[in-house]
Length: 491
Image (cartoon, rainbow, N blue to C red; front, side):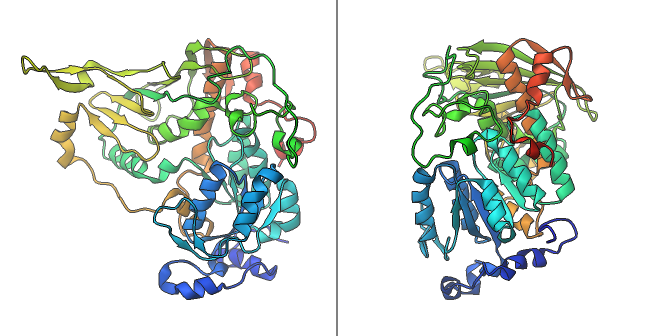
């Protein structure tokens, strides 16, 4: 059968493929809501498979459904016992309020006939022809294989951030996304929000220009902070009933099950997660990287590492990325801070204006940056931004107030990140964070993780995409998969 979603296949034909397999039917709830509800009939929706249905996967799944543009036809999770409760609830939820949705938005039939799997490979084998698109919300180390298999079968793919676990995996995702022609999207949701449209408009208008340095920071507590320092081996606990541990391990090295890995704690381990970089970097530095055309750094320096382990991320780290001159833009240093006590400051000249109670005189003071975000320093202006969709403010505040009426406007009403993806699956929009954009961004964080792990100063050749004179660092760019998973690296 011809692959679905590949170049040259019309979108209407793509969506109608499901009809031939008897998976689509018109629902009484849709007919009751009527055409003016904005909810499409099932035959016009994208048939979505959800891989990873707990935690973040549950939130993404709900947002996809809220768009009214998809049918969930398959659910896949390695934790059959823990997740099957969710799967059963979803499958029997015929109508009603979507959980966690403000205002209790009414949805049409949600998952009337969704099938549950513990292995994504079996899911594609048994019902690949019924799937148009795949949502991947699994641990970092397993994003790659699921996305590669989906794209090789012509399925559109939404992958939670960070896109992949290694530099080499990102290279392969870029290549296959281009060859397959499917719609791709990384789940850095702010890339469809105010931060994206403002940064784009201000860059194009020359308000943001000649940026020479950026301070990026995320100083919240991380899961591994209480126990990560000095840990030298993986703990082992009894494997829960229904847990498909070999599938969870995916192409990564084999280690025993424990609560320090699943659920959620995998983010703190070098072999499975991407630390604070992978978790928050895509929400903080995405627009800087894209609209300042940063590409890859020429040097990555571990300025500070505290609370070290050979297996687990540091408790605190400061990593500096040095980007050379490019496209007429000056060289730029991006300095990343993580760790609860590793707090950068806004310099006094850009800080808060405070009046002395006795004298009444106003003076500025430096400000500690505790909420996740960034400070962007250009030759003329300084900008402060948060994470996700938060827009930029010009510092100091008085400078912003003087300029605000002359600043370029930017569009305020746009499809959100989930709707943008599903509309792209239907051929009606282009995704804003496709792999061609999000993979190079993820690769910056892949390089940062290597610096966190090894320390020191690492020179990187942007053309050969190799570290200069460092065999160990180069080995970490593209670790080989474990035996039995090599095929995904050859697709």
